[in-house]
Amino acid sequence: MTRKASAEACANIALIKYWGKRDAERHLPCNGSISLALADLRTVTTVAIDPSLTADTLALDGHPASAAELGRLGKVLRPLRERAGETACVRVESVNYFPTAAGLASSAAGFAALALAAAAAYDLTLDEPELSRLARIGSGSACRSVPGGWAEWHAGTDPAGLDSFATRLAPPDHWDLRVMVGLVATGPKAVGSGAGMAGTVATSPFYAGWLQGVAEDLPVARAAILARDFDTLGEAAERSCLRMHGSMLGAVPPLLYWQPATIAVMQAVWQWRQEGLPCFFTIDAGPNVKVFCPAAVAADVERRMKFIPGVTGVRASGPGQGVALSKAHLF
Ligand code: DP6
Image (cartoon, rainbow, N blue to C red; front, top):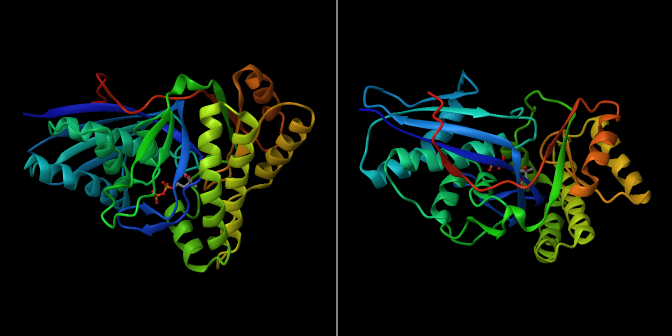
């Protein structure tokens, strides 16, 4: 008999960034972070327990996963199997409704959906902190896609990571902002975020400054979200983004994810603000730029972004929900 469950999760964009781990195996971060889930960047994952299999299988957008991806899958499944007292292998399929591995955090949505679908397939009921911790084992930022909406990942201090999970700061409908993902490149990136963080922590003299800045920015961003103070949140988010990338530039070898079009969007956003258009940018470990703004000016921002040379597409999204079970199985 095959037991099957599917779950759907949104990607999230960090406004105060996660950069650097104190424990790479468990994805325990050196700093807390704050994010917004993106309703239109979604992943659906189906998990089927199949006793006839001799190994777990994983397909991502219809392609067999790499050994590294299977390794991450195994790390998420192991605690569930132990808890359920099961040994049977699973077949997993995951479909992203946005370009993968281009700084759009597809792994965040994928591991959040995997955590819930796998728990349900093994007939386990996990509470939100448990699910968030489980998703974190797959990919750090995935823990923020579990509560969805406006979420904060608490770095925690426990060596086992029991206090390192995300909670909801506010529901998606708390504040109607729009995030425009400006696509600059859609291919896989040369240096993944895990390797990029490790290099920065180990070699960048700017890393200590990054940690000091983020400790100051977290309460500012948290309060700005709760008060719907757009300028204060935007300034903190741009600062967090630029300081994170600054810490990478100081690494040996240096790490630069930006393309010329990335910088063109950043400079355009600064120019638009001068003209009175409320918008700010943020950039993850890739060349794409996300510009966020109040819903009322979203169409204007989107239209302007499309005119910037090197921007190949713009994907607009509003605030998204947390992970949820889905009845629509992929297979
Ligand atoms: C720049 O969560 O992808 O997007 O924990 O190694 O899987 P791993 O890293 P990942 O890193 C995301 C880094 C970031 C900032 C952020 O999302 O907070």
